[in-house]
Length: 218
Ligand code: GTB
Image 1 (cartoon, rainbow, N blue to C red):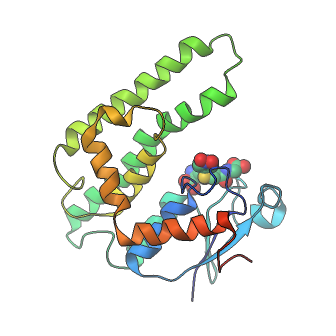
Image 2: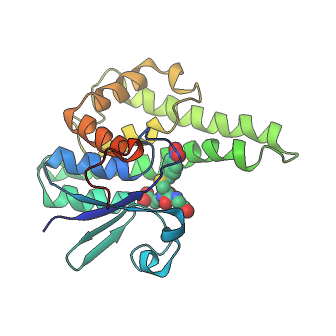
Image 3: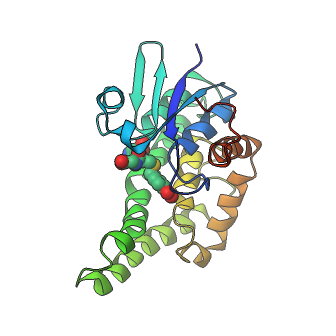
């Protein structure tokens, strides 16, 4: 059965591939699993039919027969567990790749998302001028630590894995902050991810939604 995911009908990023359906699309492409996409508007996301799939009224969701999932991390973990290509066979290497998925989502992504949100959510607040550099420093610390661990390796732990897929997507959300440029190895790491054919196919598919050329628009 072909799984169906949800994505923004009109992504605020204008097709830059920053919304979280992109990482799920990339995972599908890496393992060679065809998928369908149901596009939802902001209004539809908050309606009962969508909330039955996603309690927080967000995208992405995943439907396959009776199974409904939400949370991009859980969806990608599910895909990786049921197909080869995203998690190593060796048990310890597999556990480490999963650890990197969690690290991307729980340790690296939160300060990056906060840095993205503070300028538009708090720019008119009296604390803004003090808070912004604090958040920037939090991101800087995490990027410095990650850069130090990656060193001159291609991927975080041996071969490319779901941990790298997640980390590359999380790092992409820091584009435009100027902070990634402090770490040429992280820029090269992102570029390696983006150069993968599976990434390109996923990117083009989400971009086609924005340009109105998607064959999967319903
Ligand atoms: N933890 C959840 C997951 O990983 O799946 C988070 C899901 C989530 O934040 N979904 C967002 C959403 O549905 C879209 S991806 N937002 C609508 C809402 O909450 O009402 C986040 C996102 C949105 C926009 C951009 N952008 O424009 O650059 C980037 C990322």
